[in-house]
Structures are given as C-alpha cells and as structure tokens.
Length: 378
Image (cartoon, rainbow, N blue to C red; front, side, top):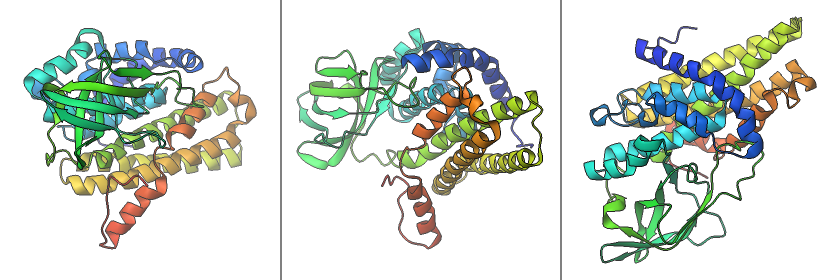
C-alpha cells in the first residue's frame, strides 16, 4: 500500500532498516539478561536519532507531535518495534523528554541536560507514575529550590542515563499545584533500583523505581513553572507513540509468520484467508495512525482524539495478529530459538498501558458532545 510518505520519511525508514538486523541479533541476549539495549542506543545515537524530537533550530531533527514532522517519530518507533519493542520504547520515552526540553528548557538548561546524551549517548528518563501503596510525591519550596520526597515507578531509561524528568510532584503547601522537575540520579537523596524489573515481557526496556528522600532540586532544574498553559495534554499526545509500538510489534509478528509459512509451503485455504484478514487490519490500523500523527500539524485536539482511536485500533490489531498468527504458525514457531515468543511476551505486557476501553470511551464522549479528557487513565 502507498502511504504517501515524503522522501525524508522514506529515507528515515531505510536508515532504521539498516540498523535493525543487528538489533534483531542482539534482542534475545538483552531479553534473557533483563539488560538495557545499550548497543542499540549507540546505533541510534550515531544516526542522530537521540535528538529526533529536538527542534531543528536547536540542532535536532524536528520530529514529535509538537515538531515539524510528527509522523517521522511514529515511523521510527514503529520500525524499531518490528524487531524489538523494548528498544522502541526506550527511544520513545527518551525523545518525549527531549521534546519537553525543546519546548520548556532555556538554552542553559538544554545544554546541561542534554550534555550526557551528546557526549556518550546517555538516555533521558521520564516518569510520573507511583506505586499504589506509596504516599504522593511532594516538593516543599525552600530557599534556592525544592526539597522532594517520594517514590516513582516505571522510570524507563533511569538506569541508562543521568537526568530523570519527574512529573506529577505536588507542592507540599498547595497540593493542587503540580511541579515538573529534572533530577540527577547521582544527587544525594536519589536512589534508582532496577532489581525489581523482572517482567514477563519488555525486559530490555529497563524501568526502575526511583526513590527520592529529602532530595534538593535547585531552581535551575525546575522544568516547567506551575500553571504554564503549554504544559498540558501530554498523556493525550503520547497515545500515537504507544500505538506505533503496538503496530510495529504486530507487523514484526506478521512478517515473521509470512516468511515461516513460505519456507514450509503452507498456503492452504484457511491460512491464506487468515493472512488476508490480518493484512487488511494492519493496513487499516496504519492508515489511521498516520492520519492521527499528521493531524498534529492541523488541529491538536482532533489529533489527540484520532490518537485515541489509533491506540484502540492498534491494540486490537495486535491482539488479532497474535491470536490468528499463533494458529497459523503452530506451536513449534514458539520455541526459544525463534524471535516470535519474545515479541509475543513484549506485546502482551506493553499493551496493558492503561485500559484500552478508556480511549474508546473518550472518543465516544466526544461524539456525543459530552465532556471528555484525553489524559484520562482510568
């Protein structure tokens, strides 16, 4: 299918396809060791992709939902996820933080926060979620900065870099005010624990728990001032990125199964029917996703609603590909010598990011002219 990609977007895909054979060879090793994909990240850095979402005027590539080419970011995640969804998510989270720096950071802040990335391919981490049994993370304003106490989990990339963007920090004296701060993992009072990261899938996407105990954050590391109107709808904007990973994983599964069946000359009537159904679903899901991404150049609010649709469709397409694909390929295809069982595990875990009925409900509310929240999680 012709998705009418620009020449630059096609070149980006070719660039990533040049990298992915080596990434595919390393994926099993990272998965078995619960090890971060450092060599993959180094490859991405050599191609300038660790600054993908930095504004072009600041030396980046201008990708991302607030950049010149929102679709390019989607395409990059999708094609990385075809061989390793974990690497794709590390790339995604890092560049989400880069995009926030591009929008909110001063020249001095960007230079300091991006220095480890530029100098030795260190990733940036971003985290807002908290363990359900932990008290809310809070920051108390003191002379020269903020004293922070709290716990954040699912801090993707926190073990692969120095700087961690901490979101959803309540101001201690006014909990309705939420702060967004940058902390350094080497500061006193900060502890990054990756020993808990032993999930079924997405193992190479190491996402530690971050503990902050009386951690002093100087004023110059406050990312966003309270009530900044630009600091809005980030969760709504992230839907297209997660959808990209789901579709990439689904495409990776589909392509592998097609090759597997061709090698075995398994082209009976049932298999050809099921493959035709899967191909149609994948193409339709990609069309919706690409439209959602491109719409950020036209109407952000409508783009976020399309992103909700795209995430719903991407997740359901991944489920369809996993279910039908398993029946098509058979049990032998899931032996550890093949990549299929790893991508299945990755897909099964990663698509649990928020309940998928939430995004569908958001779209339905918009259709009825009712109130809705693109950032809704539950």
